[in-house]
Length: 506
Ligand code: CS2
Image 1 (cartoon, rainbow, N blue to C red):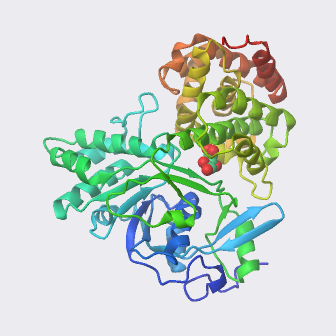
Image 2 (cartoon, helix red, strand yellow; image 1 turned 45 degrees about the vertical axis):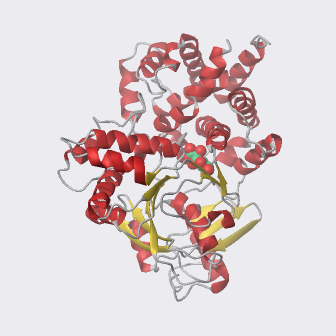
Image 3 (spheres, helix red, strand yellow; image 1 turned 180 degrees about the horizontal axis):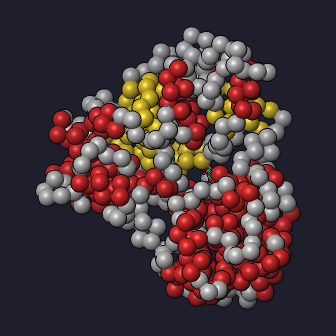
């Protein structure tokens, strides 16, 4: 069906049956940085899902960073949009209706600072991707050389980086009324709350003169940074979702969001100024999020990266298409079972076999069509969270993590292919802030081994992994196999080498 002649989705046209709650929009209590698809299919859905069951000022002011497209479309739709839950053979369209306004930070930077400072704001949440935290991949600390961070520290104008926006907003908040607030990271970073708190504190400490002193003390007393684990596969929007909404609701929605049916959210219950009763929407509150985070970051995200890079090199546009290749599924199973699982403790209450089986089903969701290029993008900031610690666990046990080395090798082949090797269109479509630097390093290197050594020494995967020459050598060898013989030969080489490893000492 063509959607252009249909009435637009908005507050008046939205069918009651598709709404996740029947109440009027609540007051704004949450300012959310990062209005992308993930937030709109995850936190927004949990929040809308509990509005019928509990009161509270939990409307969300959504802040888009640069692009005005989603914000403008949402404004034209009274901030309504649909989430299309897609599984093979079925789909469901729901309308969260929980946003009370939108801003575009690049257009209204001061309004963002004001919103964070507003007395009604109780939670400042964020999904800005790993890349949005402006830390140096080498040190993990706030990147003081980042031009945006440096400008935000000088305070030449309204802040443009996320950490700058948060600190300037908190500073204004302290000056105006000093009401407590929670900063809630919903990104795929290990210890995302603790990392956000540290980056905020590093920014505060780097403020010129005595500017940061009061703020630092207030942060300790009045601002909470709970850790969270977020999980839902949410691809980019395509016309298929616009058509699904047209078919189901008879309406035109310019900004629907596709999502898998699965969704999980685990949070520490440390909020400084209240929170929605998200437990009624299925969120799990716990004192220790870390085991859930590691489970998800390593088994799901880490394995996802391997599937994406191998898939792209194998000519596969989507994750389901990639995992349908037996050699990629086999490598995914091996990295997950042999190299990620031994590096973590499965949280109580999670059935490991069922969780793993479900992961393979989720990746195989062909109706969702999650793209290899989406998962493969920003590898320089993602892999740092996924690969080094599990690799070090295995190296310290005297064994080489061949499939983690394969993950890094496949990533480097996609980003900075050796001369004469064409990684194909899906790799070419991946974006990454480190791509140009990696290509320059490759150009200056005299051999693949030289290149991988330079990459490891640059701290792309932290400093500790670079000390393990056997890992560097393995990455270089696997790049060689990948580029000369292809993905099937490389997965076979990694598998055979893993089989030949001595059993760990008991
Ligand atoms: C993916 C994640 O893009 C990626 O790196 O691994 O976005 C993944 O789909 C989500 O974390 C699922 O919760």
